[in-house]
Amino acid sequence: MALKIIGVGGPRTGTASLKDALEILEFGKCYHMDWLFNNPDEVKYWNELFETGTTDFDALFDGFSSSVDFPGYMNYKILFEKYPDAKVILSERDADKWYKSFFNTVYDVIPKTIWQKLGMMKNMIKSPALRKIAKVFMLVEKYILEVQYKGKFADKEATMKIYNDFNEEVIKHIPAEQLLVYKISDGWAPLCEFLNVPVPEEEFPYKNKRKEFKEQINQMKATGKPLVLK
Image 1 (tube, helix red, strand yellow):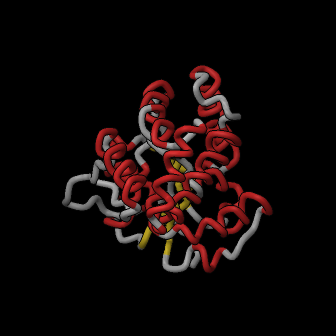
Image 2 (tube, one colour):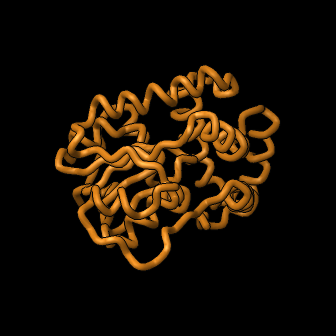
Image 3 (cartoon, helix red, strand yellow):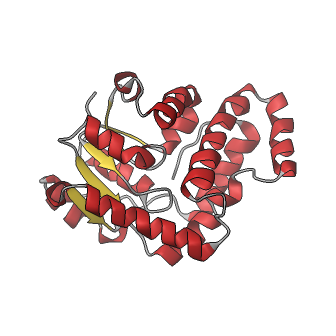
């Protein structure tokens, strides 16, 4: 299925809210990292895409008309080449606030030390579901922490520079008429204007607050139960 919308903001830039907003606006199902955690066998498509620059896009995006968050945002150039008529949304956030949020959520819950990884392996022995989910954590660690942020995410200034440089690269790469640089805090108005749809009556779906995110991710790690971002 062809993507109509490509989100190029990474985790902790309001992507869970953007996903729900696009679905409320009737743009169909939106691919988000929570889908990948709940369907970890699809890691094979993303590994292939990262490694070769292509994959079975029809199978990967079967039933989806948009993609936001990881892993899609890191492959935005490939996706935009594949779907050149798509509209692109760069969800952005002040770099300092983004760093603090990412550091205390995504970075914090990914097993990094040998002891953290051994602890997860111990839980994996008991849980087949967790064994599958581990593939997603490995994908996040490899491509966000190691590739995008050079294995030095704890270096705040260097990480924020990479974050800002990525956003500037997006703005240079995507034609202005197909790009919306968007802050989730701005709500419906700029999003609906860009997508040429009326503003809905219901409130904008602000989701995935920091505390809730950590609780849900940690529950998923401990039990292997599906991830449902709230």
